[in-house]
Length: 201
Image 1 (cartoon, rainbow, N blue to C red):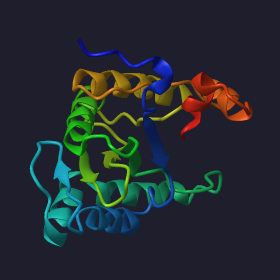
Image 2 (cartoon, rainbow, N blue to C red):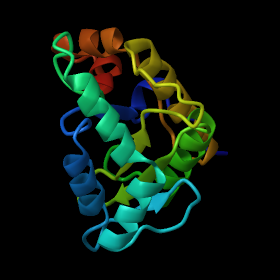
Image 3 (tube, helix red, strand yellow):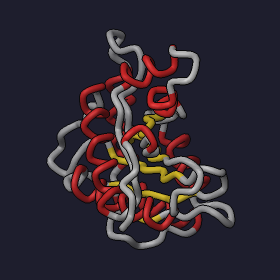
Image 4 (cartoon, one colour):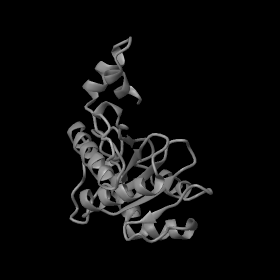
């Protein structure tokens, strides 16, 4: 009989939103091209098809109408009330600690994006070039119904919970602890393993 691990021993999920370069088409293009480079990297679209090379990235950008979105953004940017052009994409990283099976992490992220972003265009890539496996997701901000996705703190909390659930469904132990709980663990010093173990991030 397999012993169930106590909650304080479970690995913590991490979802990070990267903002720089999200409203600039050349930067988005470069990011997509960079994601697919190297022995330990890959990139696939929302149909599961691989995106290989600069030509494929150009086709993806055209298919997503990002050039049109960028043009509209520049027009909005001329409005002095706006500090910067609107985002074209959300750049999101799904990460787990060293030792997490990369293939199962990728399966969980695929399930996540299919459920959460069913009305958006996206591309994703698994990277194993660092000790902790992680998946980059490039998500078009404007949905197929022309609605913009705004990511708030409550949004991230819900995503973390769902991501942890999907990892567990693929046999990967995981948990999503609220930031306040993690911070309390980081402030404590001394032999209190049940709290200190939550602060590995």
